[in-house]
Length: 293
Length: 302
Image 1 (cartoon, helix red, strand yellow):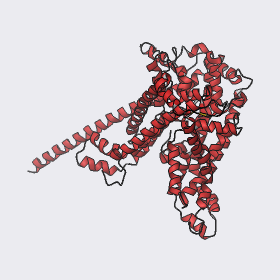
Image 2 (cartoon, helix red, strand yellow):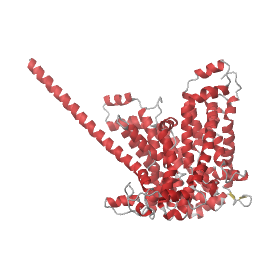
Image 3 (cartoon, chains in turn green, blue):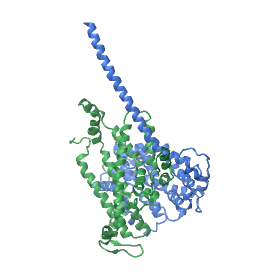
Image 4 (cartoon, chains in turn red, green):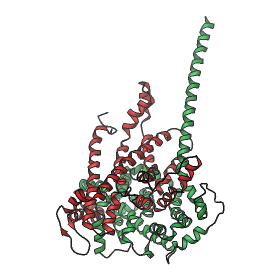
């Protein structure tokens, strides 16, 4: 607004700028520094150069296992969750009665899913004599050893995430409903089948898929509550995701330097994937009003 | 002649009506399939919650024997004994602690994020683009990388085992997602009223309080509700910063109760889980519209 000082806006931003410096920027830099030190809280950090990273990549078997499990978890969970969310959103995107009832039922789990109470429920449901195995018994199937088997244990954590597909679905549904219906009519006149018009109109328009992909990935890499409560990282470290390893190193063994180094490896992986996603999006994301089509 | 024309016309009509009824039938079949899939998915989604409520009224032996909802010998034993806990404190204390974490955090978030979003949406100033870019960067920045130095900072400030580490970052607009969401809302609001008020001599602060905030109310409610939910669910924050049991929020207390001997007393743990989920569920059903609107408009997290 004219007449005001050009710094007036900064006054309104002052809480944000203060918080950004104190709680984000400075910690970010310190964390990088700590990753090159040996620091156990008792004495001042000792600079050790690349020692932490060398130990991580050459000597640390737990890290290798944890990294592998984390990647496996993220690259199965995120695509499954988004595909399922999109599938349900497409089904919901038509003139159905009770659409709001369904939307609510699907959304409730994503409101509650991150809570400890749900993790407790999961831990019970997949126990040897828990709800899931009772259900399998009722339809004549053998009970499954969910927490004793490495692959199954990781799968229970994945299922907890899948169960929370509702928020992604709500976003997809909103995007689908905002698509110009005339595009479908034009496609129908041109003789495009349903599948074709889905692939060529619906999919390219959902730029939100791409944004969701990044956000879900960033979150999945930081999954903590599920494996911490449900499987406690076991069996045989099969669900020992990197955030739990970082937590144990930092707040149980108080090895702050080493924990920072693991955190930085995780950070670099997330950033690299985010950048790849952004870069590749130029080739496949369609922005409405864009000249490309 | 006419008969022939009529016959061909009626044949054509038959064709059309045949095609139409085939279309209708196909439509009806896909509708049935849609409803079936949706109902099935809905049941699978909701049954664990429904079952949890039933199980909290069951005895310990029945929990591991009855996959149905209805308890055979309903008991509120789990609630009574679970509420008392094995610590000197009851879940009453833990719920109050949670409330005492959530409320200041919610209020601080609402005030700081409104001011910052107003600054971004309505003013021009040096480094605006850069600062807005940091907002997006913060949104994508994994917390895991700043957590350890933050802990060291709070330790040096003497804030460990207090609620300050949970309150203060939010009170300084630390949740970039909310700022982003409010900026989006503000950009969609026309500026006519603000400009008229400025002509009449109001300053920017008065414009914010008397014009912007009333218009932003629905969005602000969304912000408060999301912050309420996320803080209720937060586990890692309290786990790192809160160490004395008397200050535990519900999330830590639940973890404690599965760690202690009560691990074998499943009905207590499940009963307390039901109570822990109740506030979030109640708020969600009372204010559903704000959640769906918020998530579709700001459209990212969850």
